[in-house]
Length: 295
Image (tube, rainbow, N blue to C red; front, side, top):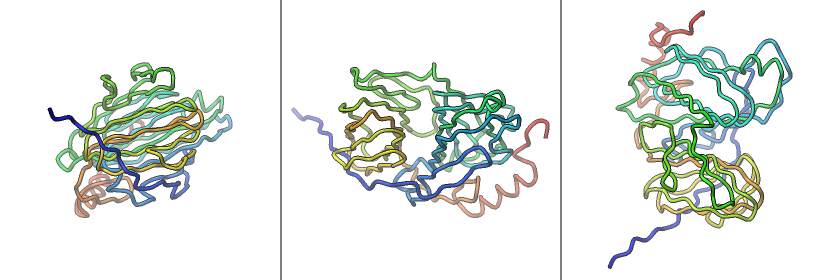
């Protein structure tokens, strides 16, 4: 009788932030990719900006990033501390706080803003968040824009036999399914592990898998210990990944089916060709992606 065997994924490398900058006046970020030239290795993910933790003083003038466009991909904002308000040219609006996720599909084109929520800004506080960009395949880049507010209460929290917890944002884990709707197979887990505990993840053969550490120190498949703001990237080959926590730790697990298509980038646009980027710029300039109400 044949038995199914699983193989361990190997490590491609361990990466530190490749750049640091402000997004608008409200999001001090450390970028893990694309600044580390990892397009193929982390696909379908395009960008990881790690914001904060940073304390902001009280103000009557909320900080953030004002009206700007996107086309050709999705933005995913995960809030750990602080409160962020969103609105866009499709008429969507939402407020997300600790544990919540905003999943915006820019697709054919959208204009939006992300600001510190006004009441939170008046009180001041610590902002701690991650923003990911998730690519869309060529066949979906010009679909209708969309928006998902995924609240903490709607995200399944799977207990790891007392050794930690997996909050399942997208994909599946141990028979549970995450609430995020995706265009291609994507796994996105907010994971907490207690010191001295181990957990394992299994991904389909051929899928990419990366692990970003927000807190503590972990090892992946026997690697050296990796700490805060470091990224572990694994090969497509293999399926099994084991994570050991050397301290109480929190990490973001990102995995998915690679989109092996050409990537053309220009600022807030990600398409497949330079001609499509030129068209995106022209369409935005002509107002075809809309504007925010009241502007």
